[in-house]
Image (cartoon, rainbow, N blue to C red; front, side, top):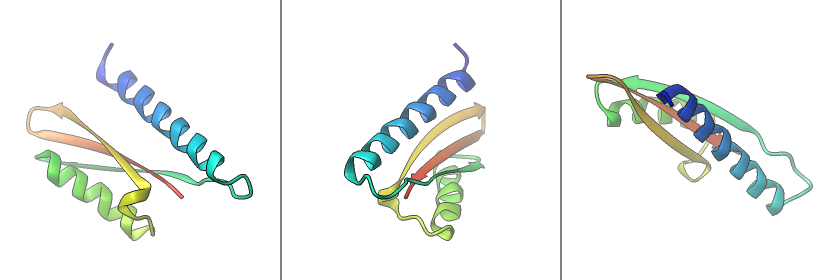
Length: 84
């Protein structure tokens, strides 16, 4: 299985788990899920770019989860999933 389908499956499962947890915590409010992407020459730079966008959108570190993937040697991509 290539990296993209595995990443899509992981993000889908993570979002489903987060939505399930949010639904169990409160039935009166709906959860909002947003995805932020970042890239860079190393994992730290990629995560920092994606988290900066998430923080600018009003999310906190406790509301977000990240998945880092090496795209090609020397370039990393991260998907940050945030639930409010």
